[in-house]
Length: 332
Image 1 (cartoon, helix red, strand yellow):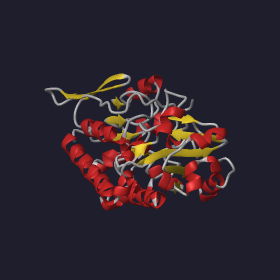
Image 2: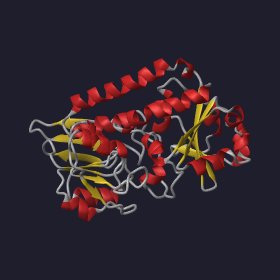
Image 3: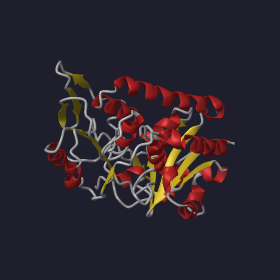
C-alpha cells in the first residue's frame, strides 16, 4: 500500500493509502547524548547520530514540523501539505505559529508522491532530517542519510503517537526540557476540557469515516482516538469485537454490519459537508445506532479533520475546542 500522509489522515477522504501498524503505541525511541555532544537516536532502521545540536532542520511526513516549531526551532524546509493546507501547502496552525513568532515561512518541499523530494531536501543543506511520523522506506532512509542524519519513526510507518513525536523531536533538537514542558502544557488543556465535560466520562466512542465505498473504523490505539479517550471516553467494545485486521491502525467494516457498531458516540470524519451529508443520509448509515440516536459528532472540513487526525504539537490545541463542542453536542 502507498504510504502517503493523505491516506494517513483518513484512508478516507483522499485517495492514497498508508500502511500502519499499532504495535508501536506507547513505546519510545531512546536517545543518548555522548560525551562529545552527539545525540544518538534509535528508530526502526537502526541508529542515527546527530553530531551536534542541529541548526538547519528539514522535516518530512506529518507532525515533525509542528513539534519543531512548537519547541522554538523553525525548520529550513517543511513538506507541502495538500490535505488541510492552503494554496502554498501550509497548514493553518503552522501559519499562525510562524506569524506569532514573526518568522518567515520555511521553504515548502514539493509534493513528490511516495518519494521524498531528494533534490530539494539536499538543497536545503540540513543538519538533520526529521521523519518521526512518516512512511519512508529503508531504501528512502538510506538515500536521505546520504544527505544528513535521518530520525525515522520508532517502529511502524505512520504510527508514532503525538506525545512520542514531541519527545523524539525534542531529543533530536537537544530540547528535551522544552519538550517535557510542551507536553505538560498540552496535557493540561486536555485535562481541563475533560474536567469541563464530566458527561464524557465512561461514554463509549467509535471513530469512523466513509470514503470511496469503504467504511473505516479506527482503533483505540490510533492517535486520533487516543486523545479522545484522554477526554474521558472509552473505546466501544464493538471496535475490538469487530476488528478483522490486527496489523493496521484501522479496519474496514461491511455496510451490512454497521448495526453491530454500537457506541454512545460515533465520530465521523469527512472532507466536505456534501460527503458528510451523503454518508449520514445513506441507507446504510441508518443502521448505526448512533445515527438513529442522533449522537454523531461530525468532524467536517479538511482543516478540522487534519487538526485532529492525527493531532500534532500545534494542531491538537488548534482543533480541540471545536472537537470538544462536537462531542458535547453528541452526548446530549
